[in-house]
Image (cartoon, rainbow, N blue to C red; front, side, top):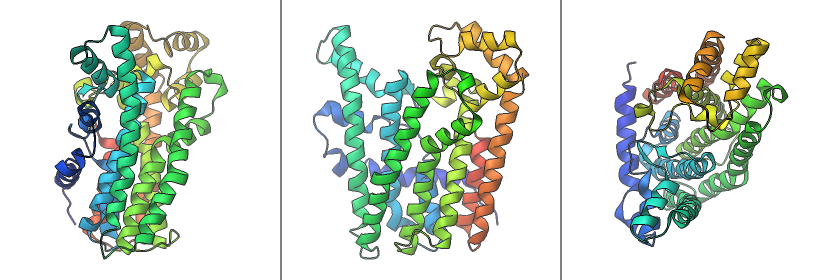
Length: 360
């Protein structure tokens, strides 16, 4: 069965974007600064990978995509608030080809409010925090939209919300704080198991939620242990880890224009990626000292960052990380064997491969 993944993703983006950007939702947010910030990332071109896996998981178990559309929109908004706060934590200036929310807020403060540089920066940070908070609330409201359908048991939606707020949020935030803590830790203190667990918490848990939710809505069941729900959850969780491993590769080798964010920022921020761990493990003492001097130095020169990247490539760390990502995808695809054959199953398998083939 042939499936056109790009066309399917484009269709998903069109549906989800149209739903999220509906005027009735825009009118929920005031004042205009907050409204602009809430919809800034959502209005920019995005891959919509998490909504896609939710909709296709719904379809893979025989459900109607349209019934799960509010949940697909919700998972995109949820992902977006994590990006807004993550950009603030990392002091990034670009996201999806435009300014990050805290930088957008600085511009608004200077141009509209006439604030000085120091006060504009403070306003930008405040706006980013409140934007993320608003988007989190927006997420729950969108999930509640699913309960308005006569075809979905409201208690299924309640279970989905409970799982998101009691488990997914806390798992993701644990991964985020570990990522921050690891940036201040020496490389010798960390194991590959530590990093893989952190990556799954940051990324895999939300992908798992997307598939789990799509399957539960598609089956209209509260049974989280249903074989199809369990298989799709495991599938998406493994793909999420592979996605993050590939993201770390693109973070040092990608095209900045395509990525829509700075290349090399992970090195200056001191991110302890699998690439860094693998490189350090294979490096000589002199090479280790060089990597230590560059990784985590916010003022590292472009030349030193380039040399660090070249060294990690020469030590085989990037190749080994790519291999690890591929192994996660292979293990993920095996989980799909429990599902009946369908176009949706084929789309999910193609989506899994895209996790490691993508260039942005």
